[in-house]
Amino acid sequence: MPERVAIVGVGHSDIRSITPGLSCKEMMYEAAARAYEDAGVNPRKDVDSFICVSEDFWEGTSIYDEYVPDQLGGALRPVHTVTGDGIHALACAAMLIRTGMARVVVVEGHSKHSDMRTPAHIHNFAYDPIYHRPLEAHPHHLAGLEMNRFLHVTGNTREQCGLVVKKNLANALLNPRAVYGARVSLEDVLGAPPAFTPLGELDIARPADGGFVMVVAGERAIAGLAGEPVWITGYGWCTDTPALDSRQWGEAAYARLAAQQAYRMAGITDPFRELDFAEVDDSFSYKELEHLEALRICRPGEAGSWLEEGVTLPSGDFPVNVSGGSLGVGHLLEATGLHRVYEVVLQLRGQAGGNQLPDVARGLAQSWRNLPTTTGCVVILERA
Amino acid sequence: MTVKIKEWPGTALSSRDIEEGRVLTVRHKLKAEYAWDAGVAIGRYLRELKNGRLVARRCGGCDRILLPPRMFCEQCFVPTDEWVYVEDTGTVNTFSICYVRWDVARLKEPLLPAVINVDGASPGMGILHLLGEVRPEDVHIGMRVRAVWKSPGEREGAITDIKYWKPVQGG
Ligand SMILES: [Zn+2]
Image (cartoon, rainbow over all chains, first blue to last red; front, side):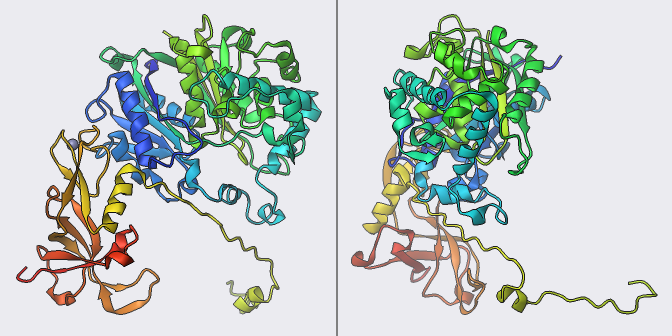
């Protein structure tokens, strides 16, 4: 039986649309100092390994991983970077512990989106140079294509996607971490300027700056730490073919398979009954519905009507993105998955303030690596 | 090539074929522009360079004077405590005589990058910069040097506000 692993400390820097006062390193220090305080660890003595997620093009510095040790307390210690979402890094931390390589591991992810002056150009560099970039479309056109096929295949509607925006922006009003909380009507969403039809301007999560740090520990190391453990009982990740001409446009198969791994590890057979709530990727409004169906929390074609019936509202039977999600909080690049985990951890500890759900014991966080990827991660978290 | 086939005539692509568009090529110029926030520590460091001064931060944990300044100590993992001005003199820690520029151009007059331990900062702390007003053969580890600043009107809050570091007489 592999060792049980828990998140024992979490911290973040202030999330803002821009962060002109702080360098990226200073922002990371802020997040790290709070996480270590929360866990009651001294990174210079108690942490065996440090794992970051970053993408050099977002940073504007290649081999960015070489620039991270100082502000995490990781100088002259094992440090490595995963080029993936934050939940990839969290899974790596759990595996380092379960293989006996480490007892306490730190995971870090951040977004300094506001450092980029030409983000769409930089994003475009992720697309195939020979047969895709020459078409000269904005990177978000893939979301328009995907949304159209998803609605066609499942019978969910454009209006139901608009309700996702309305719900998540309203939820964000109660979340002190959220940048984009607002009260909007369905008419506001549908009446927004068309962008990548059927996707409208308000259906797209806006970027934010912020950093997240988490301290992960094995069961044997936990006794000496201050933080209240939230157990990581299952994780999985998956990547579909990148081929734009033959990927599965109507379904997030990567999320389905990532969840399958995580559910198997956590011993979950009926996610709707066995989970209490979820934070799932909503980088674009339709993604929340698509991911809910892929995670088998509801049946294909059911996510939109669930929303209309209030099932996924904070007061419903299965609250989804109570935090406000990426639409309400802001999209945090590689740190987006860690933000979702953070929100689940606070809920399970009963520290979610105005967003707190009653009686929650087990939650799910799911991430997607954004366009043009077909990579998703899932993690299951449980209260002690 | 097998014994039977003595010659294997083929037509290789020439650079002209590419220049004249006879084969498909794709060009993509990345427009990646950034405006990095310097932050509290480096922001102040750069502003002080404009004033012709080098500023450091003192860590109360290890009592080191950190240059360039940073708001946290990487050894103690605590916030640093105060700003400290340090000298614009120092000692060459290591140097290299570079006959090739960044664009691979050959140089007759070599570039002389050096790491300088700055007076007033903790041992081993200082600046990576350039040496000047010195013959390459005279440069040595342990050489005493002083910053040569641009005139106040020319300074812009950049690392290049110091032109180079030159030997101190008798150093
Ligand atoms: Zn110190």
